[in-house]
Amino acid sequence: MKNGEKDFVVALAADHGGYMLKCAVAKHLDERNVKYIDFGTDSEESCDYPDFAKKACRAVQSGECRLAILLCGTGVGISMAANKMKGIRAACCSDTFSARFTRLHNDANALCMGGRVVGAGLALDIVDLFLDTEFEGGRHKLRVDKIMELENER
Ligand code: RB5
View (cartoon, rainbow, N blue to C red):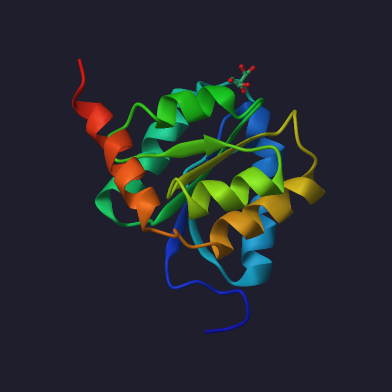
């Protein structure tokens, strides 16, 4: 594998508020030789972030992609939508510490960021930490299992 390349595919999606950041993330993934599927949106024309969260998260659910990167204006709406989908643990991050620890401790499988919140420089550092950090397991596995059991609560 080339430097920075991964043996998994990333699902990438955004609404209009995250579109420009999605372009920067896509370019960065290309430069790192990280494979990804771009689920849109393809312009800054107004659209609905749940539609794009759904497309990308379905690819994670099916195993086609291992991780998702989801972008909207704040990162919040698209993370709320993603977290409604079974098996998805989406974390909205605006800092590198959270991005690293949400992989280490929460086994997050979707990174959400706000195109109107973080600049591209910080966002790409966040992406790198998210992609390059593995789940620690151990005591955190039990806690993540408990999160997933909450999917069965009414
Ligand atoms: C769209 O204007 C905006 O509401 C959306 O991108 C996101 O910030 C929602 O959480």
